[in-house]
Image 1 (tube, one colour):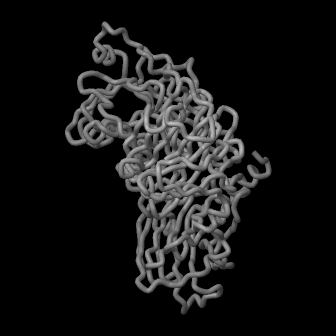
Image 2 (image 1 turned 90 degrees about the vertical axis):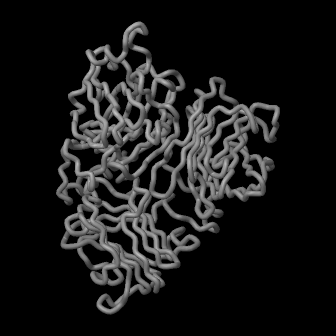
Image 3 (image 1 turned 45 degrees about the vertical axis):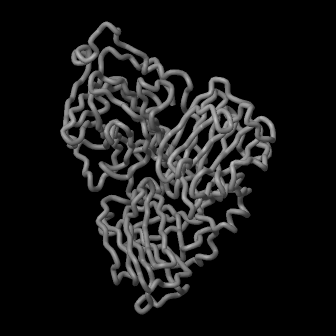
Length: 558
């Protein structure tokens, strides 16, 4: 990492009155890395006062006026409070007379979000959101103004908008600008490489593209001709976009032709009415993995996907939408991976699918972090002849609960071997219950659930059929996976929960030892310090943790 950039980041922290204590920590390094990447890849404006010094022309920023929108602006802000963004029909508005759209994020000591129709006047909506902005970590925002006058403000890791307003007499905005308030330093990063909501004509200039309507693979693209798709440890590491209602097919072969009799990987994204992801080892047959999801594709926008096949035979399909990080949708393993040299695209039953690939901008791609062998920490550690529950009662910490109330908080540092090198948390648990085992990871033992980000993991939700990772209690879904009979009412099930410094959150079960049940990549993981447990609607769940018979110290995985 560039030393000058790190020094600049430290100076900014000091200007923002943020302590540089812990500058050697992994969390600091990750934030510094993000800051340096944005400084390099984006245009930057620093503002201290409420005076919109310069308004930029919206049409000068590529890709922020997609079909149906006056503007769709992604950007980052590093500030303790009072980030102002204005959208104006003219470059030099009369602030006392002219109508503009003004968005304020982190107003009133970082506690409110407002959408206005005039500078410091005509509030259209006011939302109370606590501690939205961060003075040590740039926050990504997305502001949309549709042609119909719907204004929405989004932040990263949150699917629902932070604030929404509607204007029947929509202003024909053509310029935008940034400001702060009362000598409070705010840094805005915008026009970032790879961050734009491109229009079709723009994305066709920046990417190769292919249209498909039938399950017939016609064009084949040589992988070695595509930029960055093959690297150390990977047979293929392929990021691309899809725009479609359903049924996007990707074929990976050793030769430039489709052969239903030969072994080749076929990946179906959005099959069965846009609800399934399937990995096959032969066209139309030999299913390696099938996952049921919802709303995978969208006919009105491009969604980023990533296909990884490692030299160890790990096959993974990720999805990324708007401000969110890549989320793992499906994973399989082939002990004898095929020699993939070509890629082709298809669809099904006259359904138009648009593929965009080999784009000139970069994706933030997750690393290969999984091992295809059984996870050693999920090996059986109690003799089969022993009554497991009675044994765990004598060897572990124990907590039983039957409602959705996190009452008891355990300090992670008090749990032995729970913070090895490379991890914020790595903990083995046993869980016994019929459904709804909830785990909460927090930065304090008295979290404010209206305001604070946390990690909430729901295991066996929806009648023991689903696993969910959230970033708030009951909200902000980061990842969701369908897995039936995850936990058992009759006996404890062994689980492994990991939050790595790299931002990978993974949950393993003894049912599927080699692969996580669910995983998500957090670009800037929370510095969690406490764990708590709950259930739902009178369903008793028993948690066993901090077990004295388990030794994890000899196993390290990043």
